[in-house]
Length: 313
Image (cartoon, rainbow, N blue to C red; front, side):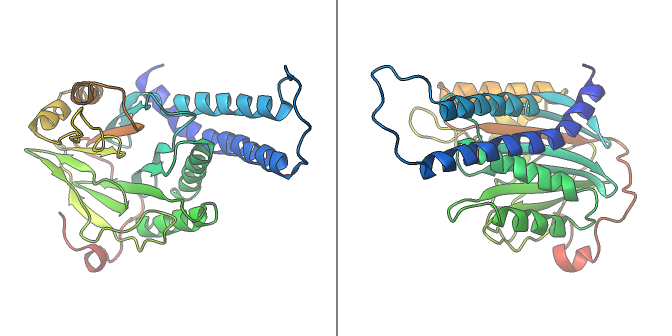
């Protein structure tokens, strides 16, 4: 499929993924609840027939795995005047499906991106990833304020998460010459220019589901600069001696490769050389570069920005 055709399908697929996978995993929860509520079965025969509930659950797991892999398959192209490339690198020991998520929305307020990571590596994490994507797409096109959009996500997830659950996330909104970020307990995006610079928030807040008080951060992002958003599988990848993957000059050089997808491939090569073993955690990567003339949003996306965010970082 051509780049733009595939990106269009990928963007639209987020809605179907959130609805279809969410419903399927709710069915899994229902199956499990029914099994817990049912009377204890008699002792099994020496060679019992497959349990119907188990077969249904296994089928839904397979669907969830295939759907998530389709949604997070590699892509590259341009959306809303911003060049993008994405990679999803699953952990070798990931038992079922993970909670890493990426979604992009070309809205009247500018191009918006969500990168997040649900706590856990099971069907519930995948369901919550679907809920997060669905809520983002439901409101990204109609909520002018990025901070308010983050609050809506938090309210939605608080209704879904258990006492120990949370979702780290960073929301990005691209505008001419800058990017606006709201970070909820997520690894800081990296700006690639003359050097590799983490765009860490001045006041780090907790993840979604733990009632963050989100604040917007504005950062310069020129047409010759890039922005890497990622999940913690990158910085928590360890070598044989327990040393985390370093974000050093080699990473800057890798991310400076002319083609965005080649840059991510080179980063993956460095990561594999560092760990010399399968990844212990899933990893989602999204590399962005604004075009020479990114389109001006149709509706002002930032009001009273100086009072809430200060100047550009």
